[in-house]
Image (cartoon, rainbow, N blue to C red; front, side, top):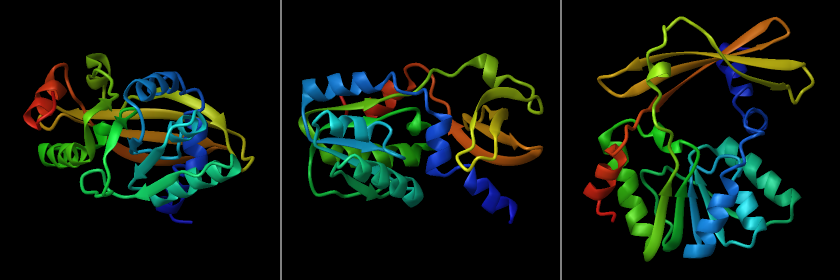
Length: 224
């Protein structure tokens, strides 16, 4: 099997959910947000439905949008197993048209970090504005960059976590390296998945947003 194929195995919906099994503290926040501003709710970059499904179970009319069809397939299977009817849409958050407006639009769990430049950000925010009810809210969850992490030695590995492989191959350990390009504000990350003496490498990028920067970008795009 080619390295790319191996890499995809360790980035499918099952592995994603296991890697993030302990990430759930934001669910109650989104429930409170939904109760305050109302349905319908649109989740951008919904992935495997980590947030979408609990909100649907809580009674919210919610749509999940994501660019990854494999992730959405896994989300649909999870929703079906819970007898939930959720609309999952395969679309790019920079260019979508759902022909309806939403009172609550959420962009959870650092997903906005995968919009790498101003053109991407403006395109996404433009779509959000077109879909947001005039009395609605747009909520973004993004971490403040850690200079300690951004200034790491590029070749030095750091422990991320571990989980049990869903195909019973044993314990999977994840370590990472990263290189930060301050000219583009992009952090280039590599995750190393180690199991049974073998290693799979998966690279991804994350755009860093510094304090007040998002405020200015939102204001520029017409948000209050």
